[in-house]
Amino acid sequence: MDITIDVENYKLNIRVGGILIHKNKILTHKNINKEHYALPGGRVQIGENSEDAIKREMQEELGKNVEILDYIGTIENFFEMGNIQYHEICFLYKIEFEDKKDIEIDYTMHNLEGKKYLQYEWIDLSKIEQYNILPKCLKEIFKSNDFPIHKINNELGEVKSSLVKLVD
Image (cartoon, rainbow, N blue to C red):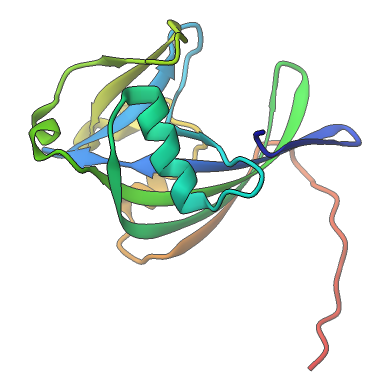
């Protein structure tokens, strides 16, 4: 069961995203009914760690085994979609296909889970500014060489939070 919890007016998601780069192009997924791109990945399941989740998601969606090369960082993402406010925690990993023949893939791939509206496209990193990639802070992460990185992407304005006093 995916970790998605309804809390007051929010949906809390725990998600993973894979950064896979070949020939200066990054693999993205796109819902053909939407105007944006995102990283391939998905929700972490209850009892599953984030590393296993990205491996499972890539196998389920593309039929590809991947290895994790590095932990890139975490995004705290606040956004609205379909009149629902989301609070999402996303763990990012640099990944690579285990089968070295797959490194030559440069074509659009399709979802193997039956989601015909999802396709996986390669975007040239030198033209990344031309694309609507969500969350928006991903473009900064792609340009950074200082990892791990922590970003807060807040498209909702002020987010209520509690102050916690840290005691030595």
